[in-house]
Image 1 (cartoon, rainbow, N blue to C red):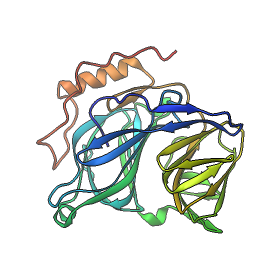
Image 2: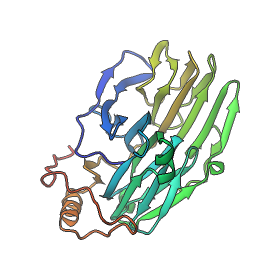
Image 3: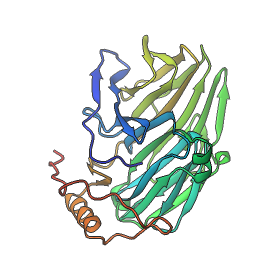
Image 4: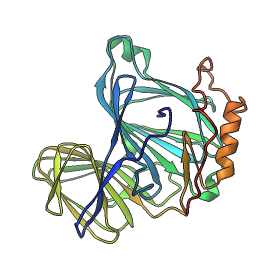
Length: 314
């Protein structure tokens, strides 16, 4: 998913909790009639493990005949991770991939040195009055893989193992958690999971990974004696286990991992550890040197203004 421009950082709230580092309130943007809540990157937290970008889009419904139309645009140095709760998206890319994604399935696109893709609502969904609700993450690639060949993978819902216990149902989308490991290929030590909790259910989140976050997508939860409603990302303190109690029927996204091998530049659709790689990607897109998307080559998103002016990562 790509939105024009770079948003202002999400507003962060520091806490006095021994278990919680801070709370992120996402910035809300409109994407063609669908609300998008962007929790990462934020002022105090650029990444949680390898996850450098977190968008929740929807729930929403388009008028009949309309839908999502994210025109072809480029990426470098990251993997997009798209996971839906409702609706459908057709993915096309410059490798020739053409894949619909539906709830419970997973699209994983590794940009590496460069890939171009588009995301649109299938025509059948538009005709019926399209709905859309889901999450897209970007994962920064380890430095050794930033210039690797691009790749696209699609995983059906059955590739994501489910762990259930006492009112908690956790689908492990990527990496490993609660003794289960997804089949999805990963280049970083991480976890990403979709957790559905019935009212009163209790879910532990151990400190096995140094960096961890909980995003409340719906409902409300209590963590360390504080209530958190939908639309909040809870950033855990390293080394401190958490206990999550559902105050209502709730849906959470759990994510985290080992710290990345250094900070990253992030501008428009590009992620890299190297300033020159960002500048080169911007020039290549502006000059038409990147590949086109077969079957969707009549439109594109132009470079967003001047080339990036990137601050040192200090």
